[in-house]
Length: 226
Length: 226
DNA sequence: ACCTGAACACCGTTCAAGT
DNA sequence: ACCTGAACACCGTTCAAGT
Image (tube, rainbow over all chains, first blue to last red; front, side, top):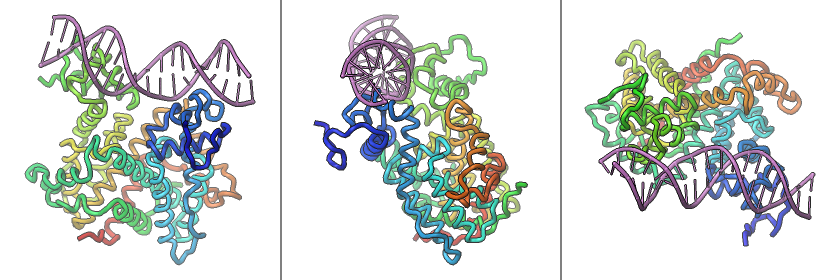
């Protein structure tokens, strides 16, 4: 009775890959909090205990799922010094878009430094683009950390928004109303910005943030490390 | 009636403030995941069900706890156009330091837009500093969002590191060894950066990130919104 | 070697029953 | 009005018992 058409034959044998794929399917349907051992097991027509043959814990399952997702990121072309900035932006946008297809997966790299090979490939590519642009080694090293932290946080925040659209927290429309009607006596500067605070969509804001950081990279003095 | 208890009387009466304070005590002792309704109730010598007189849910409890924490942030002096940059950096460092005293609380503003009054006060102050520095309204509006997202993500990441120092995930030393011995054939650019990737402490990296964003603000073109 | 049901020690939340 | 014990519907993980 439990049949998910896609790829899985009516009774797929359990395997490492099958567990990861089932996890990703549950993730897409129910979000990161819905990825429970029991739910993943049910997707495979088995019990939660069976999963422990292939993954040591829920945490490890999520880590492996993340690396699988990281493997889907479009790396774009090799570094071209003539358009490295555009390439950096495009790579980071690809990372964000990929994570947005798996709502909440960004909590994984936020909760522990990803060590999977696919994440390494992305980091390596980003560094190569920065170096092609003439960014010094120190700045590049720290920038990677900083910008991935920002991308992950953006993806995570987006996932939360999508998840509880109206059942809890506030909708985008409610937030807009809230910020536009803040007490101007108490919060004069917020009030003076008015609708600018909620203007634009997530994509525009993300691109602006990337531009800030890259522009900053070109003008700030490199970190002072030996 | 606001008795702020370092040393709570053996049998404090239940109240809204008592619940929030008990939550914050549990948070400091056990981290955000340790803040369960049962643990907070135990701190008050009662049962979990009793808390629901004062808070609607665990989620609301955490939101209120966050706003209490936001109230502890040192806002610094009023905006001084002569040293606004330094003031922006100092304010954001204060926000980070305050959150670092309550490990994991940063997951709250990451999971839903904070609407408490104390968070609004901080945002208002940040905007006033930016405007004093001549930052245009559009850039300032978006910058607030972006930089708080980054500060929250930094605090959250730090909390995770501190929490599972060695029992799970990787220690700082292990990560350093890991990045310094990456396969140079497969990841040439990571390998070429070597120890730079793990150089410096969290504070130095955070300050560098702030400088990037502020410098970017001064050089990037404002967002293109009507 | 792989799989499983049942159990353990937890969760958030509800509710009838008490004061 | 406030507080409570007990229950409900969940968790992750372990383990003896099966194949």
